[in-house]
Every structure is written in structure tokens, then in C-alpha cells.
Image (cartoon, rainbow, N blue to C red):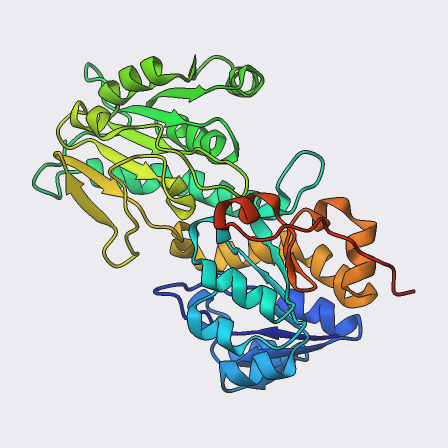
Length: 373
């Protein structure tokens, strides 16, 4: 199969979909890989590294899209990328179509694209490809939150994360006990902070209790407990996840108004619309804004801050799926892997994701796949 890796054009997206090690595995499996020149530069992978493992270097995104049967990328499709897609191509990306534009989905349907969202692939009650990015985002949420607790902005609290003898540490409140929340809690404990995790799922809270041996306070999430936690927080981490859906605002603007002056919100859920009502997307070069005297960090592609680690992590998590499709064809791969099939958003000219169909009032057709053997 011919696989294409375009350079990301989304603002300040430095990750690349497949690191040279992944290209090496594909080439050794007998496949042809086209890599746009400088696609890996943001992650410190040179064109020469890709060339050495057998990639074909090309010098425009158009050539990648024109020559490949499968496109692998990171960020959701831009309008220009959608226009370059070829009939019946396979697309792998973090699509996040539920918060995107209806025209993008219509474009995918019109061109009979098999569009697979990395964030929707399942395995053993887990989201294995998304997990890699969630681990990074959870750790980074504490790293960036700590940075803005320092006295660097006019409203900053000037609080040391771990405190000192006789002075209390920072209070970290995490909403969501999934992968992001667990990694945020681990990072915050390591810095000596006081940590509270809220979630509706008692099993997840029990897992947090067991994992951190009661060093984290766990609380069942509801409007009352969230409003109390928000008031207490020096750093509030929004780690809510709803697979394939736009996230509801579990923290209202009225709650934000009650927060400490200079408190920091890190809304990790912003790539799904955000779980804090006052949030809106920011960028790596301009990552924060202040509203109601609260600092908001809302970068949708936060793992791009550590692009090399993120690119390796994504390659490790996605290669089995990419090689499966390349070796066996998309139909056989989907038939043999129910979890991969759950990642399919559009297939053979129809929307195959029920949530997207309801969200955008599209005709929904259950995925019907037939073996090509």
C-alpha cells in the first residue's frame, strides 16, 4: 500500500504522524511511504532520517495526497487538506469531527473516504491511541499550571507548588479520573501539591485511591462538589472525556467567578469544546487569557509542546492499526478488529458514526463491511 505523511499545517502543530521508526516498519513490510519534506522537522526528525529508512521524500502536500492510498496525520483536517483528498482514500487522524464543520464530514462522504479517528479506536475498554496523548496532556497540565502560578502575570498567585515548611502547598483540583486525570494527579503528587480528584464513576475513584494509596482526596462529582472544588483550587484541571462527543460545561461561568484571584484553569478538554464555560481555544505561542481574574490555559494541541515524545508515542500506539490495514486492506482489517471499526466515522459514502449523524443531521448507516479475500 502507498502511505502518505503530510507536513502538519495547523497553527504551531509540531508533531508528525509517523516517526522514522514507524516508516522503517512499513517499508520492511513491503509498503511505499511518501513523506512531505520537513514533515518531521518540528519533532527534530530530519528528511535524511526518513530517507535512510526507505521513505520517498516529496516536496508538496498535493503530491502526498495525490500519490497515497492512505493518509496519516495528526490534526483535524483543514479546508485545504479536505480539498486534496482523493476518491476512496483512507484517512487516519485525530478528527474531532463532533466539534468541527459539517462541510468537512460532507466532503469525506462525497469522496467516499474511510475516515478513522485516532481518538475513537477502542481496545479492551480503552482508547489506546488517544491514551498516548492523554498521558502527555495530563503531565503537561501540571507543568504549565505550575508555570502560571508563578508571579509572572499581573494576577498570578505567586504560589510554590509544593509549599515549604510552615507554608501550605498549592491545591490542585482535577475534574475527571481517566487517563488525563490520573497522570495529572501523579505529576501533582510528585511536586508535593495537595490533590483532589472528582469523577462521577466510583470505580475510577477507587482506582485512584488504590493507585496513590490515599495520598489523593477523591470526591464524587456533581454540581455541588464541583462548585466547592473550584473555589478551593489554585490549579483547576479539566480532564473530562466523552468519546466522540462535544464536552458539556461542567464548570459554569458563575463558578469561575468564585475562584481565587490568579488561579489557573488548564482545560485539557478544549479539543472537544472544553468543559469550562469561560474557555476558548488558545495557541502555543499565545496560550493564556485572563477572565474574572482567573488565568485560562486552553491549547487544543497541548502535546505538541513536547512534539518528539508525542510523535514517538503516537507511532507506538498507532502502528499496529496502520500496518494491519496496509497488509490486509481496510475491509479485512475492520472485519478482524471491532475496536478499529469503532473508529470509523465515514465509509463508502455514508456517515457510519451515530453520534456525528445525530449532531449534524446526516443519514446514518451502520458499518457494513465485506471481506475482500
